Every structure is written in structure tokens, then in C-alpha cells.
Length: 129
Image (cartoon, rainbow, N blue to C red; front, top):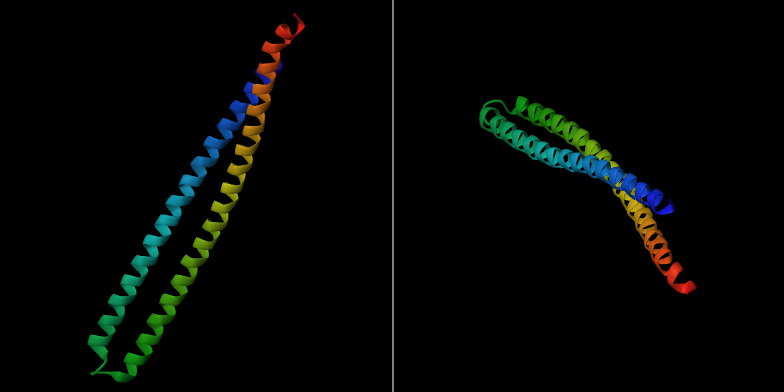
């Protein structure tokens, strides 16, 4: 009876690990997506700066400075939002990894307990003879 309860507990831990690994995979994909968005944002900013330079630098220097400053502010705001999201994802990833490590530790303890119970069940009858 005790052995079957331990098996049931181990199966519960296996299910929890699978759920956490799924969440962790989704989190890692979001981190990858965030990195892609940062690169895309940087590329769009570079293109925008080039367009402003070629269209306004010599012909309209007063508007050039204003447009460059506005583009920089927009870019910094977008990067701040993406970096904030990345920090949230990193925090969530760390929490999921911590939970996964705890479950692995519990699972290891229960596995050792199961081995001990099985060993004592088999040696109990032999020790009496």
C-alpha cells in the first residue's frame, strides 16, 4: 500500500514537471520573440535615421534635428517597453526553473523512499529466517 502511494506521488510530480516544462518552453519562445522584436525595432530605427539623413540633412537642417530627436525618443520608448517585457520574462523563467528544481528534489526524495521501502519489503522476510 505504501509503495503504491509513493508511485502515485511520483506520477503527480511527473505531471507537474511536464506542466512546468511546457510553461518554460513558452517562456523561452517569448524571450526569443522579444529578441527578434528588439532586432526589428533597431533595424526600423536605422532605416528611419537613414531616411531622415538623406532627405533633410542638407535641404532642411532645422527639421533634421527635430526629426532625429523625435525618432530617438520613439526608439528609446519602444526599447524600454521591450526591455521591461524581457525582464518580466526573465523573472518568470527564474521562478519556473526554481519550481522545477524543487519538484526534482522532491521527486528524488520520494524515489529514494520508494527504493528503501521496496528493499525493506524484500529483505524483511529473509531477515526473519
